[in-house]
Each structure stands twice: as structure tokens, then as C-alpha cells.
Length: 315
Ligand code: RIB
Image (tube, rainbow, N blue to C red; front, side):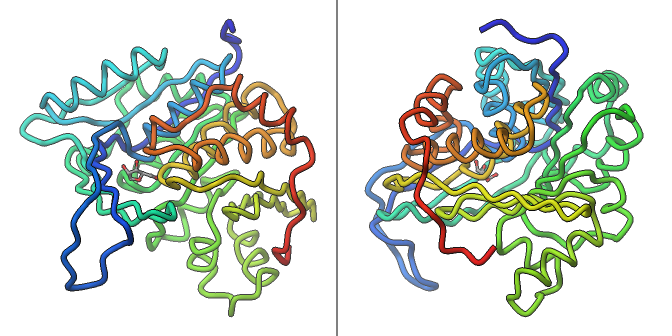
């Protein structure tokens, strides 16, 4: 598939080397557990989202981030190049590339510890990176790199672009950050956290989030996702039934594919459908970047499961 030169996604965010450790069940505090296996692969929320956008086809994807001056950084940079991703990566001298230690249980649940390394040193956009942001029609950021970067991104973007914040992991953010964001993507837990609890009432949570940003997408795992905006629009997309193997990076797959589809000019609902299907495939495979599907695979799932199961989530 040839790339549409008008569709550009810039992903500003973290780059990690993941060590995935398979266990029968996640260890309890104080417990020692023997692993079934341990494997290394590319990870980091920013990098995963860039890979998902690039594999979604037809969009020019730029990854803007930082790596250490170590072999892991070089390997990851080569891998992005093989994916056809443009990279604008700062190499931080004397720092290690970010690492994540991911424990994955037999039922596909995970727990992750991130050692951020070079990601924390990434605080300003270079002029080249600012130029890439200015040319993008969709910009995708997360919170595994310092939140202050968002001000640089907002200063560099064009007025016609869409700035999406996947506010993961959930962190305390100053109110001024929300003014920079057009569309927020969060999971249910992050949504409740940013809404200040909301007493578990989803309508209260959504209302509080919409008082901060104009558009919100809440990802709901096996229940799909939901979109809301300040004009009262509400779109619900159910999930595809799959056998969960490893949920690592499924949210990132959603974000990358969603951003790529919007950059291609697809309506929000179509972008949500593609993103939900891509995330379902990602959950059915091990690893983060290793699990992200191509758009051909997403298309096959969308055609074969055109009417996914109904939902029980009260949205
Ligand atoms: O969202 C999944 C990612 O979180 C993993 O790839 C890991 O690197 C952590 O950043």
C-alpha cells in the first residue's frame, strides 16, 4: 500500500525495551514465582503507538523520542526503520534506553514496572521535531515522557491538526495541560482517576472529563470503547470476542490505529471500529510490538466479524 503523503501522524513519546516474563499467575507481594519463559522485544507506549500507526498503512508516521547511547537503543532504532517509521530520536549520552519488565499471567493479565532511563531526559522538542509536529495532521502523546513536552508540542502544531493525549499512565496533571488537548483517550481506571473518582458513576466521570477536554474516548477492554464530545455526541463500538493471551500494548495498538485512521480522514466511528479490531488481535498474541497487526489483518477481522457481540457496559 502506498503512503498518502497528506496523512501524517507524529507520535511523541516513550521508547522501551520490554522483557516479558510469563508466569502462571501474577505474584502476590512478598512472593517468589518461577517464570515459564522470558523474552525481549520492542515496547514503550510511544513506540508501540507509532508501530501501530505505521502498520495501519498509508500514513507517514514519525516517532519523536529519546533513547540511550547503548546497543538496545541502536537495535530499536533499526527496528523502527524496518517498519518504515521516520525517527527523530535524541540519543542521551550516559543514559540507558528505557526498559519495562512485564509479567504476564496465563489468563493474559499483566503488571508492568518501567525503568524510564532516557525517556525522562526528553523534555524539549528539537527544531526538527517541532517541524515534524507542525506537518502532522494527527499528533499522539502519552505520559511516559515528561508532561512539560506537551507545551512544546502544542506550540509547534498547526491549527488544523488534532492533538490526542493518551493520558497513560495516570499521573497528576496541572489544569493548564488539559487546555492543550483536543481528544483524550483513557481506560476506565484512568478516566475515574482524572475525574477525581466520580463515585463510579460513568455519567459523572464523562461530564467531568468533558469539562477539561472537548472529546473523550474511553477504552473498555473486552467491552470495546465509547466516544463522547461536548456537543452531546456519543458513539459506542463493541469489542470482538477473542481469547486473551497478553493484553500488553493493546491500548497502544488502539491509539495508533485510531490516530492513523483519523489522519486518513476516516470518521470517528470508523476509526474506533478499526482500532477496536486491531486491539483485539493484539490481545490474542504475545508481546507489545510483536502483537500489533497489519491493516490487512484488521480488515480481515472487520469483514469476518462485522457484527461483534453486544455489550453489558452501562454507557
Ligand atoms: O503500554 C504497554 C507498554 O507500557 C509496554 O510496552 C511497556 O514498555 C510500558 O511502557
